[in-house]
Amino acid sequence: MILMNHTKTFRGGIHPHEQKELTENRSFEVMPRPKQIIIPLTQHLGKPAKPIVKKGSEVKAGEIIAEQDGFISAGIHSPVSGKVSKITVGSTVTGFPKDAIVIESKDANDIVLMPSLDPEKVSAEEIRERVKLAGIVGQGGAAFPTYVKLSPPNDKKIEIVILNGCECEPYLTRDYRYMVERTTDLITGLRLIMKAVGVNKGAIGIENNKPEAINKLKEAVKNSPDISIEVLETKYPQGAEKMLIKAVTGKEVPPGKLPFDVGAVIQNIGTAIAIYDAVVKGEPQLTAALTVSGLGVNQPKNLIVRVGTPLADILDFCGGVKENAVKVVVGGPMMGVAQYDFSAPVMKATSGILVLTEEEINDHEETPCLRCGKCVDVCPLNLIPTKLARLSSLEKFEEAEQLSITVCMECGTCTYTCPANLPLVQWIRFGKQRVMALQRERESA
Image (cartoon, rainbow, N blue to C red; front, side, top):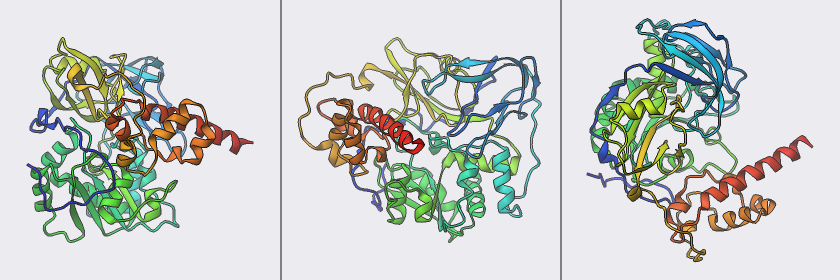
């Protein structure tokens, strides 16, 4: 069922087959602790955390094992009680090996918690400090340290906090289950964010393909005029920050600017839940909520797993993969990362594990560009993807820079819609990396 009474949205975008029916009615299950936990020190954007434990150290669940290193960084806590067996370089779901702390877990239920705070009486400064101590990072994919977002510059006047409940990528239903199962906690989390940034206006943006969640949220805020439930058109990438701000407020974030610059703070549903848990329950960020789905896994589920749990353990808990599975992707199918090593662990912002079959992936042969313009029509940022990809492939990076290649958010709408099956977003990503390297060279010179 799709609610059609609102059509707030943005220009461009696509509507891929949702595939959410595989898990949308499956409540969260808590996965048992694994025998071994692997904690990458890079769980977030910014500088990696700095380890404060050594090989042989005994740790308790909830105990900090790596401190934040710099302003844009986040501390890391042990998700289990056990012994540090080594600090080494290991595989990660990002595809790049990173330094990691490996912990052999033991059968113990002890956990180190912070004191509970009253959400009605807690101050803005106490909220920001608790979020910082809890090591919370954004759950929308970028894993930006959350306390930084809750500390906008003094010259930026924030007017609204918007929670992203769109969950516009196919297959993923983690945020949907949070909205249905923890509605009251979610609203309290939103209020804590509003208090932290000093605003009295909040909104939850949610696509109109989630009627049960919409009804529960509207019921929860029916006596709260300061919070609105904004029902949006179901379209990808509706949940991207700039698209969400445009749909909810009508404001456009200029190229190179941030939500702060138009008076908005955007947070994910999962981030609001993590903030509630940290403030009210005293829990640091020890777990990841994620969807395991796709036609290639035997038992699709929504799970709460300990950060650092290897992918292989999670897939085994879901009954293993089918013989016709051909690809495992961490994240959503549009912006996720294909995996090559199933010993790689779940990280704080991991939202999904997809096991895909041949029929679910586009493995068609490339053909020459048809000059059809479909990629231009769907680009939500008004770029010219086919030209940017061409310039990148020819290594004409300065020309690509002039056409605003760094503005691209790599959402993949261009590649999805291309009838010639060109890997447009892959070429643009390559070009962006080279252009940004050139810009850094200019700055250092």
